[in-house]
Length: 102
Image (cartoon, rainbow, N blue to C red; front, side):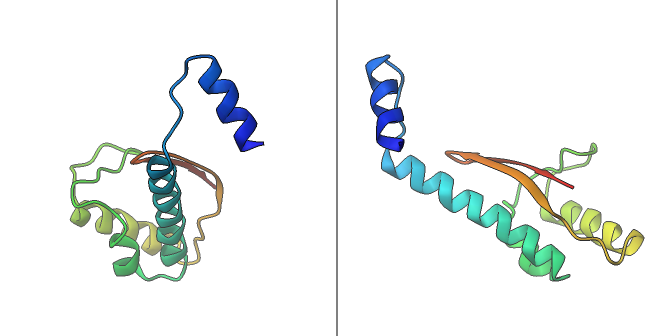
């Protein structure tokens, strides 16, 4: 099916992702999911290792950086000690990953 979709896109003049771009997206999506798994194990240091040093939480206004992320995650854990992140959807393209968790 992937071959058919790629062929159709190429015939319509759309840019087709290269294998490197697909590998990058796959790796980044995997890292996103691993970060959520680490959070669920209450291993914040392992979780933070998956975030870029300049990452910014977008669910509420906050400065960039792992320190801010750690404070947010620790605060979430303090407020809800048994919280578990369940990823419903995760989409990756190149260096971008977007997820919907419940």
